[in-house]
Structures are given as structure tokens and as C-alpha cells.
Image (cartoon, rainbow, N blue to C red; front, side, top):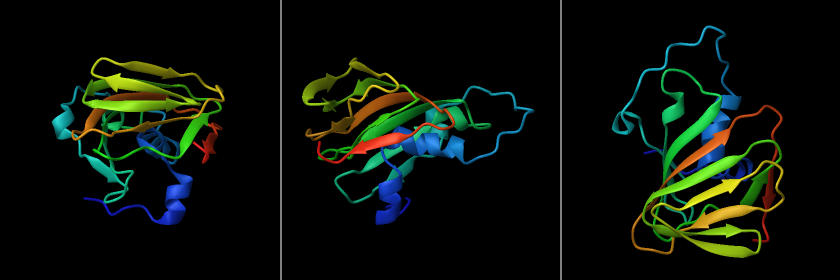
Length: 161
């Protein structure tokens, strides 16, 4: 398992999708793309972020098997008792979240919404409504996170959530 990110890195990177998206921004993509083949999620290495903290997240970037993708698609698990703070929004990229298993809460601006299997949320680009997730249950919150990877996108963090 990967060690937790250093404090400086934590300030620069956040949330599973943002971490997955960073891979695409910092990797050169050949103009001659490889053919993408179907993969099994169990064949993709699970990455861990912030181990042992209240932000412990595990994820698999299925989209990047065989080469970096323009759209991020990740299978993500938020551990019990953890959250994805700090709250944030994107200036150019939109994100989509779909819950596969477990229960949690979506904190969107000043509102809080319950998430359960089958819940879906869309975070439009430029919508100045920061969001983060929390898992107060005893089971992992498992979800799909999809997002664009647009050069020049800025992630705006709100620490007062």
C-alpha cells in the first residue's frame, strides 16, 4: 500500500477523481493511441490515498489502462468514518458520481444529501458550489467517479465547509 501523501502534497491534490485526473495532466499522450481493450476492475491495481487519516480513499483508474484517457473514470471507496475534504469545485471540468454500494453524505454548498446505492450527482463545471463526501457508516462507500480532464482547469478549494 502507498504511504499517505505529505502535508504539502495534500494541499495540492485532493479527492479521488482529482488525483486520478492529475495522472492525465502530467503524462504525455502519444498521438498514436493504443487500442483500448476491455479490463476487469480486479485486474487494475488499487491506489490508496491518505492512509490512516480521516480522508482514507482507495481507487482504481480504469480509464488509464492501456494509456491515459481524456475522460477520468474511477472506481472509488471511501472508508468508514472518512471524508473527501477540503470541499472543492472545478472551473472547467464537470464531474459525475454514482453510488454502487454503501451509504454516505454529499455536502454540496450549504446543503447535505444522503447517498445510497443508486444515488447520482452531477457537478457542472464552473458551478461555484463546493462539494465533498463523508462516510459516517461502518461500511465502505463505493462509487464511480467520472470527470473531464481539461487543460487549464482550476480546482477551487473551500476550507470553510
